[in-house]
Every structure is written in C-alpha cells, then in structure tokens.
Image 1 (cartoon, one colour):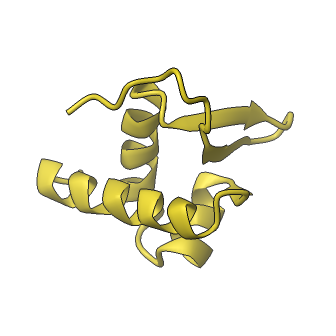
Image 2 (tube, one colour):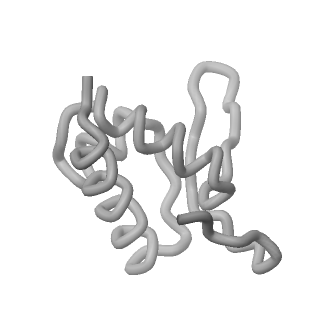
Length: 79
C-alpha cells in the first residue's frame, strides 16, 4: 500500500507531466510505465484521488479507463 506521502509525490508527478503535455491520455499502466516510471499500484491510488478531485477526465474505452487532464476551468482544486 502506498503511503500518503508517496501518493502525494505521484500525484504531483502526474500533474507535472500533464502540464508539459496537456493533451496526453493513457491507462494507469501506461502512466506508470511511460509517464512517471513507478509502480502501477501507487499510480492507481493517485489517479483515484485526482479523479475524485476532478483534476482528471476518465474515458472508459471498453477494456480499461483512460485518463487525461481535466481542462474544465470551473473546477476548484482541493487541498
């Protein structure tokens, strides 16, 4: 299980990547493997939190969920 500190670091790494590549979209496996190179388990927890915070969009492609930046300007970042 990822610690809260590890999750916070992974969330930051995901959001930093999306700031550099705002059109990027990928599965949790792809995010772990290609974007930030860390264990998928930690990425899944971070994605769950980012999704709950409305910072990511989720697309169900029928076999897996694909995540990308939520560029909707009306959402508010929660601390």
